[in-house]
Image (cartoon, rainbow, N blue to C red; front, side):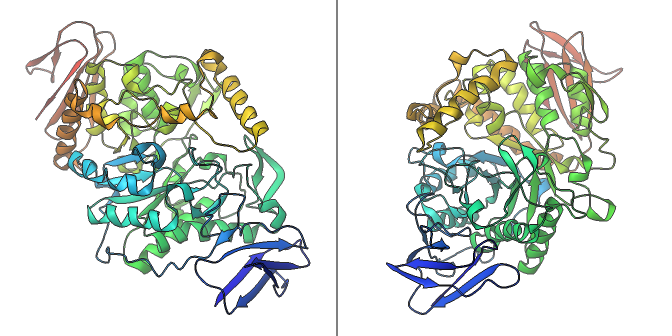
Length: 555
């Protein structure tokens, strides 16, 4: 027997279409819910909901979309999977080394099973947690996942529910925690049928993707429950250890308890009931300390957030780029400030934004921030998807790795970064609607004008070759200079246990172009000049001779 429930407050009749028949749901109740139990329905059956006699649509809470975003939903028994992680407890977040990966390009197969085959590499590297880019069902077979529309259904082309459970279980068996990237600030347009079911969106606010999700207007209680329930499902049914909340700055919500706070509270409470910690990491470009402050003092209660200021400061120093938002960065002093407190802009005037930006992160631990040189955004949102390895020589890549992995933040690498992967990571899509595909391609070209990039340099996201070129080349790990960089990353990660909890002290000379990062007994001595120079270790102490554009790690 299976119970079918759906929220459709604007409909007068709802039927479930199941095995060639239509079964009417009882309702609506006062809250707009319809429900029915069907004795001879169960796992593996396909179904859809017909609203007021219309063609069947996928269940908003569909657990599986084997035929894609426009197909029928399929029932799943979440209790049938043979988990082996009963004693698993994730490491503390502040002791983690994260590794961001995209299922479709991480392995040759581009599937959950394909990712499992590469996990031993991550263990040998020394990372302790993977951050998986969104896997909720999105249009077609290839994409970043940020235009998902069936938030409860792991992507069918990756391997569906069983495949994702297998990946999480395999990670836990190897001592790797799993954080999943989820998107609650918008849904994709292709295959998005939520509007037909109810007021999931509102035109009271506008976002870069159209109408905002209805988190604070009439009938928003059910919308909030839909999202909070989804967040908890990934932890409960798929055993993930935490979520990364995409672009919370793009969520418009003036409720007394913002939806981000409600999600964090629900996940932490669920973790307590399960007897294991659950982590909530947010992406926000507001430099707002409330994101990671405790709710008791007016915060949202997230455990950590991405630190884009640290990335921008490090990237601008190493590359010299000053276009777009990099116009706000470029000095060693800003990099030093980022290392000390994550936010470079903590109320200071931002030339790029032409206003003051950010708030002071007073009292926040460095472990409340993720630090990185690369991530999917900072690579994929370049015109040609160039990695840092295409912009920097080996010496500067080693400097970057040392600063990131010896920083006071929770460090994160992007797939292939550890060996200086030569493959780009481009933006790719697989929209079945040619008009939508064309609009995406044209929009990408316009977006990059602020960086001075030529439209001719922007690959067509719809071209399958754009996706294919973004797949990692695992064979190059054994070739120079990739093998050298891989060994360098392994050595640096091996130093992390000795500096966990240590304070941070940064010295630099803007004119001489050197910077020293000190944590406990460890010193990272960086020479960004084009000539060898002696870098003073401290006043009245010996100097260290450092070759041009290189780094020495001492201690």
